Length: 345
Image (cartoon, rainbow, N blue to C red; front, side):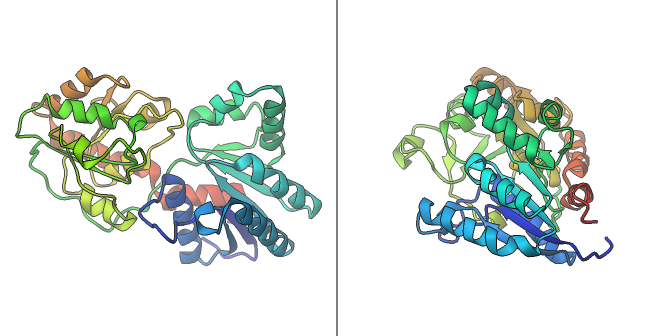
């Protein structure tokens, strides 16, 4: 990448300082972008929007606005990266950037933006339309969302969920019925379906669950009713080494805001196929019976059948296809495309 004199202002959520294990997909993606810019000598300032890194929500907003006013004069492009609360922060970002004639972009994480827009009342929809149409460039995680928002802003592009190609090499696996779930431990991620499926399968199956518990019902006593075992919450640097010990990723999610789940992309980076659901975003990145198996949400029968299928499936071929699929989500490739669109390289 050729060097230039442009200076970015990157606004988005950074790692939770107090509890690094509580790191969602948006944080991982934003931190990946920051790391790429550091490694490639791109000049930037950063404003952290993670409210957990401030005293409270009110002081977070005040600090963010003060930093915005501080950095804007020396900025060539303002790039806002957000999954939630983008309405509150978008208005001052747009207002102050327009006053100082600074080009802007909005990168929207997740897959709920079209549903939120369609379900909004008159006033909120007008406000959302103002936001999406007034950023100079939009970046959406899903191809479906790119098509939807091009009607509002023609400068809408695809910036998928990405990951850095791991230095960790995939382990040569002899399929051994080792299944793993790594995500937030909550009902909408399909945890209960996994637990019920575990009691229908034989003792030769290993089914482990990792991730921060975000709903109170998931106690040690609750997990004792099932054959699946809750292990622990993982710091981000332990996700890939842990994932690499298993054969198949389980993610029977029906979470309404699901986009491209990062854990699926991380599984592909290690050549690990997945069992996931037929949500719009997941269908865009998972080829049924090639890189994994797609099932209907909240369907335990289909989940059990998919897990049993791997006993007779050509696991090696599916693993190789999953590994090849990762090329679509390589940080280096997609970040260069993003920087070209905002004319930084």
